[in-house]
Length: 411
Image (tube, rainbow, N blue to C red; front, side, top):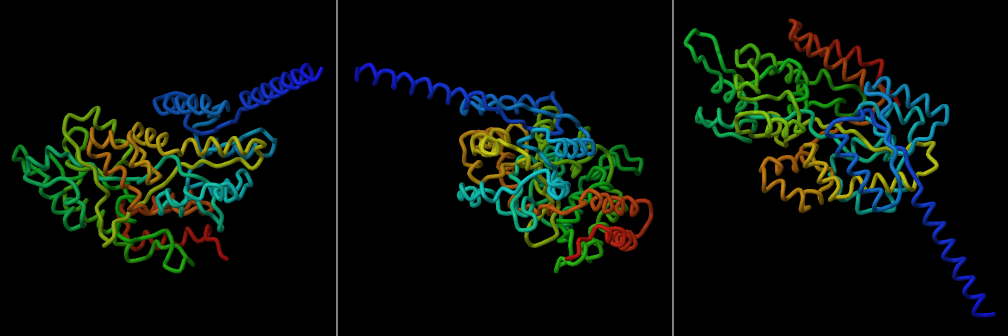
């Protein structure tokens, strides 16, 4: 009898353990983005989902109910109010503070306390872009410098110019390079090849590299009227007036472009008939700096599966997983250990520009989590457009400063 009773207990234990395993295997989380449901990026994500599911038994349900960010935000608010189950939500850095203030997502400090090594591994500059009101609300996933300088390496060498950092080490150097690259090929007195593609909408590439910031030194007001901010617009206008701006980088009628970020590296490599170099935007401060932004992983405040959601977030940031994501997308690594992984080192060996990609966050200035940042950003962009319509840089920025006052958070 004792033997039979022991056998029954063992059978029950097996059944219970199988039942518990079944619950884990059937567990699922909802991951929502505005990235759509097709394309290379989504195919890459789906492969990551499958790997996570195989390793954990947790299923990932991917949703992208809207690709327009305004509609996406509206849907998040509606689903939050109606109690629609969400777990991990991708947010854009410019509007994450609005999502936080709406109560859609929850802080992560309690979870981060369980993985103290993560704080030392994420590039230090990134914390500015994921911290709000003294708490950490997100983990970095995709993003990086809004603008880099892509250079036509073949054109540089043909003109006797050294490609790479020498062209962007200072604004003086950048201006001289642009002049040297500008050429009149047919002798009609008009340039046929220009030093740099259109700069009119590229405030990203000049404002922060000149030492300007969103706020003034003590954080009590916006920094749009600082000498550095006004000087950035003056330099952009100066380049335009010197006749070194024009052409198209892709057709080799412009030697440089600051119109895109590092995420264009792969497509440029695949489509352009000339060799490339990639650097930060032209710098005008002793310490290199450039605006970076992030698409962020957040945990929904109404989730009943936060442990599973957090496990998924950590998986996406695991050095080997995120390093592969960085290599495949051109979004820079967010953890320092990623750069040392086998997959990222193999990418560097294959293309030295991945070494540059791995260093991007060393010079990063993150747009802080701040309410109504989209509106503030649009005011700044409008000021730049007004300068190229004839308004003086000072008048345009003073007007922007006044307009932005309505969004200033006063403590």
